[in-house]
Image (tube, rainbow, N blue to C red; front, top):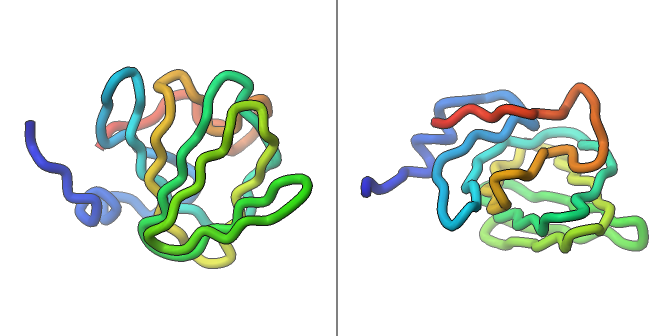
Length: 119
């Protein structure tokens, strides 16, 4: 039971759209990821996703609206809802989601990460 320094973990990587696992609880992964640019439109049929913005500003696009999530704010995307994260500048995000969650959900492509590193 050691504490986890979010800043120290974020300093271990610089690439974008490649989540790292920093902890687990109750079948959930706690992940850190850096975002920059646009992700892909996707949805998760079986999982809700929680995005907590640690640094920067995240734009979450939905088919009918866009929600701006500032540092210190979070958004929960319900299962089955199509969405696309966008980061005009680099954003650091903590994710809470079931361990089975694939980052691109129902879409496969170059940004899909089937296996995540633990840091």
